[in-house]
Image: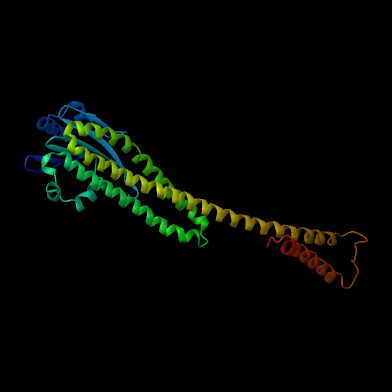
Amino acid sequence: MLSRHTHNDLVWIDAQSPTPDEVKMLVEEFNIHPRAAEELTIKTLRPKVDVYENFIYLILHFPKISSAQGLEREQEIDFIIGKNFLITAHYGLIDTIYELSKIFDVHSILKKPNVEKHAGYIFFHIMRDLYKMLDDELDHAARHFNKIEPQVFGGNEHSMVRALSSLNRDLIHFKQTLRPHKEVLGSFEFAGTKFFGEEFSHSLRTIIGEYYEVSATLNAQHETLIELRNTNDSLLATKTNDIMKTLTITTFIMLPITFITGLFSMSVQNTPLINHPQAFWIIIGTMFTVGACIYSYFRFIKKWM
């Protein structure tokens, strides 16, 4: 499906899951190279920049954290940027484009400063909004931190292991998807400056600055997650050690008591106290005394309790 937006001599076409016939129309109208046209219809594994005679072809992948279960967590957007036209292509209903359409009015963008000069400025404003959306994604992760932290220090360390692992997986995926942007945008800065002129280089450096801001926020959140996860692991290990210590002490207390019980339960001749009228209470008292002594040893001498 093609959506066309025009302003004076500039054209912006958004192609959602373009069909071969729609791609053919774009090829004929904007003189798109066949190799680039072919890539518009398929998903690409790696971001890249290709420079052609009359346009620059840029592929970027954008990560998602807040996607509902079953939706793609990595979204590809292809940009074909000419002097007076911009084509954006994506595959299926992508959250990023959907959210962008709600907050991003085409006509207001086309009236932004410098847009009338060439289509590169349309790309510039779209990229700024896309990186703003990545900031919103990281804000979504930050809200998870705000929920997890009280649980970690509230005695729910065991249940937080899965939550922390899930969030760590999301941030790792986010970082892996975002990492190639640095190299790709660096290549695009060089190509874009040559294609559009030195005046556009400031806007290209601004885009790269937006990337670095998102990357810095991501790194800070990942470091916070690692520290929170280490804290949770320490608290969980401490709690586990306390449980093991309690079980060990209980075993030490019960072992001699069990031995005494087994000793006096043997049906053999000459068993001590076997005919004593107070044998039961003597044995019970002995067991209690032995247990109390062992407990006192661990409580007051070893200070394990």
